[in-house]
Image (cartoon, rainbow, N blue to C red; front, side, top):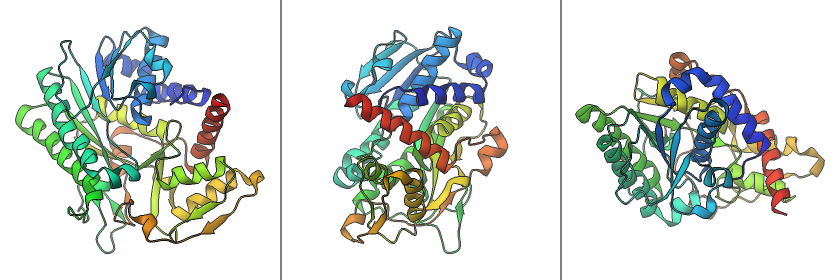
Amino acid sequence: MVYSKIVDEDVIDIIDFCDASFLLKKLRNKRVLITGASGMIGSYLIYTLIKLNELYEANIKVIAVLRNINKLDDKIKNNKAVEVLIHDVVEPFEIQEPVDYVVHAASPASPKIMKNHPVETNFANTIGTANTLNLAFEKKSLGYMFVSSREIYGEPTCGQEKFTEDGPLGQVDPLIPRNGYAEGKKAAENMCASFKEEYGLNTKIVRLAHTYGPGMSIYDGRVQADFLNNILHNQDIVLTSDGKSVRTYTYIADAIKAMFLVLLKSNDIVYNISDEKSETTIKGLAETLLSLKQDRKLKLVYAISSEASKGCASFTKGILSSEKIRNELNWIPKYHLQEGFARTFIHLEEEIQNSN
């Protein structure tokens, strides 16, 4: 991921929304460990902490955990407040310094990886969570947050339109290897609840719906990535299904606001993060993205294939209710579907221009 004008605007917006004085009260002089530091979520969290240091001399120290330093943005890599730790989360941590907060965001999000490497996908969420929880417990951390997913809910029951944190869970077949992502997330959530119950660790869980924005890969196999990739390369969007599956899309900056609120302000353990105003079908998403780039005169075409769906989640319905986080923490998404993807286009085009 590359820092851009759009990302800088987003980070300032995150700090303003969450209230800089509140963030400083909680984070000043603290050490924060973040796994998956080169990913979209991890990078945005770190950028926000760096900006707090730049604007307010907050003296926040960051331990950025990742496996491949070549994927880390120079703004993070070269910042004096950031300690880069090359480490696989499936291995135990050996850290001598205090760790005040832990955020475990390291997990494959690409359907291609989930399909082709289900074991590694499962381990990042199960063993990785066990290791980060043990670290937080050992360090007597003030807070721990696990980044979970809408996929833990599975396929909704007949007539069920939304998933709530305390409502019924849908079905997930544990014998489908690709579902190691969902099953790994579910096991990790249980560990978080268990550490809270047995050891009193202040654990938090955020269940994210489809999250997009600067930092997302346009090559990871998710439909929004494929569509962006098509448009940026002046190709028609190809739908390999009927496009009727319904999803909600949350812009990354809005998701990060919610995560800081949950980690630092919430009383309960688990919260959905979902911009319900950005609900759309896959076909509707494709049409929205094409409308943002009408000058390219691209169109939507169909090439339905059963083979193309093998890496996808085994459910087609059910969206996350964000009522709890809206009511308890006053979370209000700012960038809905068109605005969020318009910002994403600007960032991606800047990245392409710079790389050229």
